[in-house]
Length: 264
Ligand code: NDP
Image 1 (cartoon, rainbow, N blue to C red):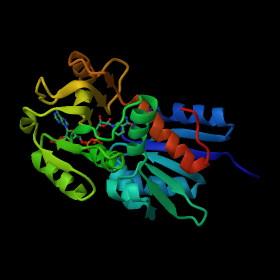
Image 2 (cartoon, rainbow, N blue to C red; image 1 turned 30 degrees about the vertical axis):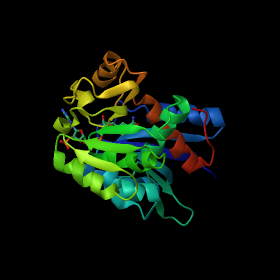
Image 3 (cartoon, rainbow, N blue to C red; image 1 turned 90 degrees about the horizontal axis):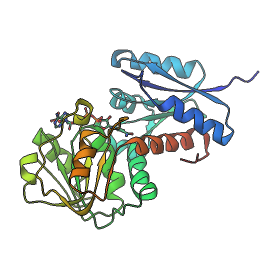
């Protein structure tokens, strides 16, 4: 007897996750038979919940806030991009029973920007706001696109500097505080802080966005986020939220699990 392949997203909170809907649509579209559910898993229960999921026949997991670092530690082996991100959003059961960890967030962002929205990252001056897990995950895939420079600005300045130091040697990258952004200009500003979630905006100088520049908020919501609105006010060529990134990171996870790329 064969049972339907099971996948899930673990997070805390998880109620509003769009992942079950996205993966169910991908499965229908590609003719794959699978079920994908959402499970509320607090950090202290993560290890036991993952072990139980795979022992019970689960094939793959997505992990979201606040579990990505725990998933990184859980994985028996990691892809290079997960290794440098120090965070895992996709776990995949392997044929030998081991669990592979990957991070598809960065490639999801780059695909959304470059393929869906036609933004060229090569020779681009890029500012990343925030130095948390999401920032760490997007740096390597962005550097691979050969931007002129990446500046990471964060409220806690030491975290921005430490993060930049980690990636030095792979490209031109520096860390600073928001006050150091005065008189600087960027072609692409990525908001990777979680401030949009509370309707707040980091303190940004008026002239920060270059002419024809692009703004991208990793956060997404049914209405324009406060950072997307900031970009619109500053006459950004495009001011985008992170829904496209969410769909693209899901497509990459789907490909890892099923070997088929869904239409995004
Ligand atoms: P973390 O908690 O790891 O990091 C949060 C970052 O935001 C830190 O740099 C923190 O600064 C900064 N921050 C928080 N509040 C403020 C504030 N009021 N003003 C200025 N800076 C602030 O979160 P993640 O990196 O995991 O996630 C960041 C965002 O990215 C979230 O909105 C998340 O939803 C989104 N995301 C979207 C994805 C998608 O697919 N679209 C995928 C992954 C993440 P400090 O260090 O000083 O505390």
